[in-house]
Length: 452
Image (cartoon, rainbow, N blue to C red; front, side, top):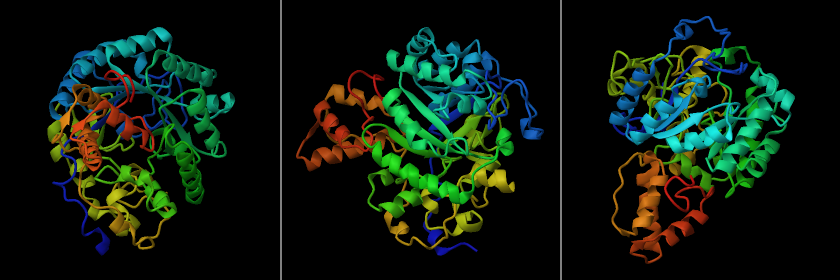
């Protein structure tokens, strides 16, 4: 029986009409053997499941057809080319150049081992907007054991320093577990102070792929990690963006600590909660399409169907958007419009992606103020509508913002200008607004793509 708190959930028509972030696993090949790999990548697969049986990969021409599908249905989508290790594909630069020429926001998700100065400059020239690197400990031996190869820590850290020198923005990603739960603050400081990362994403384990073999920490310990993450986020405010990944219930922690926190803005307007199938999707190396790369349930294959049809009509995409039909505590929770639990984790633990997220310990109804704090309307993804005059340079700087938030940012900028009695948007005003942001990385100074 559904609780009345979810009667005002957005309808299917209100959710995002297209994906804005696409994680595309280009290959199963990998030069590491990470013990938690959701794709079971590398030369020695361990997962005996039908969902992991087909390890074929699209060829170059097929990849270009997928790019065409994305560019047609989801123009300017953030397209994360990952693996496995995508840099092991001989045609990676050809794919990057083709995608960039189609105006997609190309990001490369790599372990960083292969990053050299020459490669970094080549990727930047080819149109890559940024990279994502994995760093799981400050102890090289611990990181190397977790990643399955000696020397991985050294190569990743060196790769990050090369990217910083070249001027190619990058994200540091850390998966929390027993191996690093006591040094998260230090890892964040290292990422910001030593490596100069733009963003630090803390990932919470999803038991899929080889992740089912990993000993996870208990839900109560995760609550402590979320508390710690909130402190880290506050400490890094204005220096480095800090995010919780695969833990949409982090919004509860922030709300309970500070109902007026500026970080809660990132959960409003339809941007919060589990993004699977609403504005996010995954593509497997063979072309299979899923609402989330951590969710081994597929709507179809891009060699046989169009991306638009799979997004709009396939069973997992249609069903996963019915957030008013979630089971267990998630179906009764006052945070559902901005959380909804991790759908991949629900599937990993129960076999049903509409079940409750067992990692969350929240009891529905214990935070009644949440309903009033988070309106259910969708603002993200709306088109840009400019009502004020914009300096050409200021207008150009808006292109440094991903498409799915650009319309909302334009509206916020113009609202700020009106409050200050301005009838023209200038670069100086953008700088002023930027300086007041929790993490001032939006519409960066200089030419397009110079800073995110």
